[in-house]
Image (cartoon, rainbow, N blue to C red; front, side):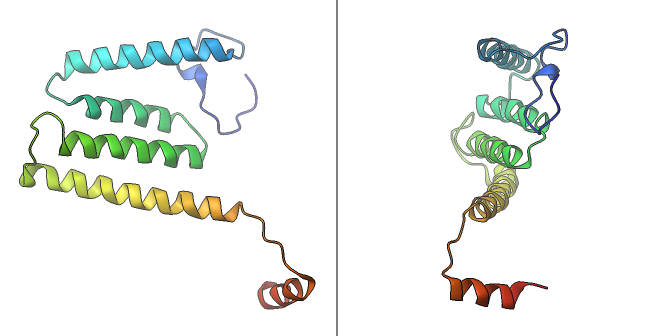
Length: 143
């Protein structure tokens, strides 16, 4: 296996392979995992909503990923599924006593992760200073 660069570790889903997987193999293994995980979750917890099940699968992929930016994107997707599960699915009507706390916390998680994702994106931008601006910047912010 190659040096871990924070990418998703496919070895978690196919530990019997001693080589890197091709793109097609990753699609087959990933699709099989999602289908099997959904089937087992529905069998063991039929009362949970479909979006709730998808949230759990998204969290698995997030936790198996070492890349903090990738994890934040997956966390936003998982929280979105949770919000849908508590807002729209199963009962088709909000039960404030039961749904308000999960919706609040998942909305908060979306905002926090979106903030850090935006900060990362902004830090990736290159600024082009004119010579005078660059000198001023260096004088003000260098230690």
